[in-house]
Image (cartoon, rainbow, N blue to C red; front, side, top):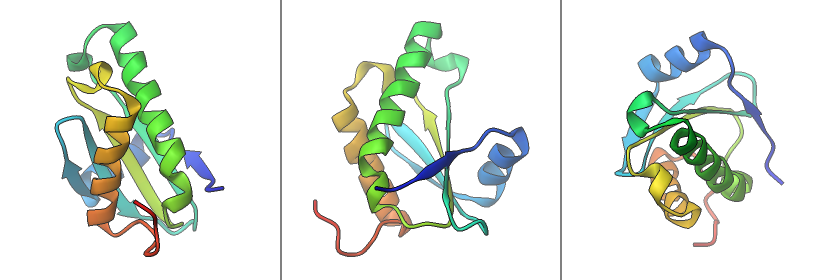
Length: 116
């Protein structure tokens, strides 16, 4: 099972935004940055543009669940920041997971012999 740690500090998020590569989809934006702590660190953000508090919380839950399912496929040693977009609260976690897989695959963060 893939273990991951939460990003909590503002400077960690800002570092991922400024130095990391971004991968955009209509549902979620992923920022990927290599780290030195040999573990996967994940942060999820939602801005007020996404909607009210209920929609923002749903967007975070959907993103968290999607990543939880694909976390065993992710290599260690990366910081990942997922940013919710306007459509995120209105889609199922399976759709978010497909977008995440595509983004992380193009980032080269997934193990090579993964199942589709």
